[in-house]
Amino acid sequence: MFELKAASPDCAARRAGGGCAICRARPFSLCASVPDADLAQLEALAEPVILAADQTLTREGDPAAYVYNVTAGTLRAYRLLADGRRQVTDFLFPGDFIGLAGGEVWADSIEAIEPATVCRFRRADYRALMTERRELEAALLARTGDALAEAMGRHTLLGRRSALERVAAFLQSLPGSDPLRVEPAGIVRLAMTRGEVADYLGLTLETVSRSLSRLKALGAIEQLSLTQLRVERPDLLAAVAEGERT
Amino acid sequence: MFELKAASPDCAARRAGGGCAICRARPFSLCASVPDADLAQLEALAEPVILAADQTLTREGDPAAYVYNVTAGTLRAYRLLADGRRQVTDFLFPGDFIGLAGGEVWADSIEAIEPATVCRFRRADYRALMTERRELEAALLARTGDALAEAMGRHTLLGRRSALERVAAFLQSLPGSDPLRVEPAGIVRLAMTRGEVADYLGLTLETVSRSLSRLKALGAIEQLSLTQLRVERPDLLAAVAEGERT
DNA sequence: CGTTCTCTTGACCAGCATCAAAATTTGTGG
DNA sequence: CCACAAATTTTGATGCTGGTCAAGAGAACG
Image 1 (cartoon, chains in turn brown, purple, cyan, red):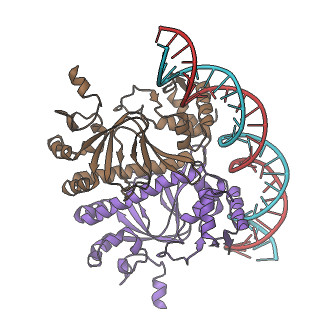
Image 2: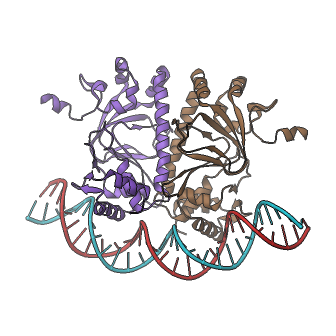
Image 3: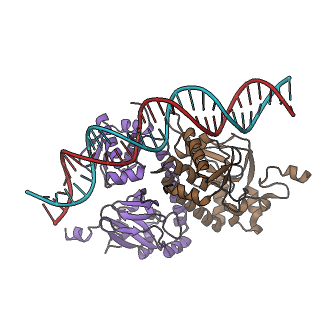
């Protein structure tokens, strides 16, 4: 028990005795491409950061001195438009890497939605490590390519699609189906508010709420609590997401 | 003159005597990171492909055996939704690299909008070349990162934005301001139809047409021909794109 | 010069935003 | 543990933006 308390920020790296070796996010993060034998090298550069809810990690326009690997919790990335509208550009979950785009300054502000932990690397250190360990550079390239494919897919999410389709597709895209993640199969946890989902999907929070109600009425999902949904009929949810008439 | 005729697909690589060395797209393409002295190595792998209008380059779901570098013309990338709606995910211009996302199969279908030329590389060859020439791998990583940043920016283009804002932002994003490109400053050439723009922006072709008319009425642009626009007031266009009230 | 394709403009309608208020949930202090 | 306050969500009423349907005007092509 005393052990557990010290380890409370569950996946933080470089914890006495534990570190990367017991990081729960490692299996599905970039670090997976570093073999166990070389973990010490990675750990020497990794610095755990614990974030409280609503705490800021990066600020749009600030120089990007670090890159990060999310190890626990959920974060939101967003930009502000001239007139104050907020566009949420991404939600970040354990295993996600922050800094793939590689610009000199951050394109988005990133904040914790709920208590979260990330692994921080000095950008220069990280680059040096990549030069030294080519498999890491290759892994980063592959991951950036995956992120690009996903970002292009998001274009399809926001284009010519109805509100109901967007919300259904959004629910599908959340971790929950992924067996490596924490959530039991079929359970979707909405760490973000309706307003944040709306700012991500280009809708209003009222429309998001109405869409969820309609999905409930259709029997596709059931609401366990405000933040917990159970996908009753994944097939139906997928059909709605794809725009099938019902 | 006889020389010009043989060279008509303007930027095709490996032309007798010319090749990459005189490729007009090279300055702003990935190949720029290969020094002149090593061009022969690149040219040995490059295979020029000439596409007629509406000819297909890749088909969604097909195995991705090649990667491409656009050297002339304009192409459209798109996906089809279940009910037949088309989502144009990207327009490709000279210098753009096709295959950054790196999946085993193509995520998008890509077709020429107008006569176009591309440089084709066997994916395996290209990977081997990257292993051999690290600066090329680094350049590819940087470019993929840039593409990712741009794709995330597109999220902001499609989110909570009015039709007029989208069209204005789209015009700004087209090559024309780029000094390295062919078009004279301030001239925007719309190689794509209104319908294609609509499928890119998530609008209908009527709305795109109406938005262009409104931009004309505002004095932001002038229409030289169906496919040629002149940006009269870049500042105004930018203001509209950012959502300032007028 | 006529056929076809694309673009433009108009009239009408639907989906989503906006405005508003009630219902739940969450947090706080007694 | 309960009660109150604050925040979030849900639901309702109404209006506007952009989609749909339709017709006419240019361009492009043979």
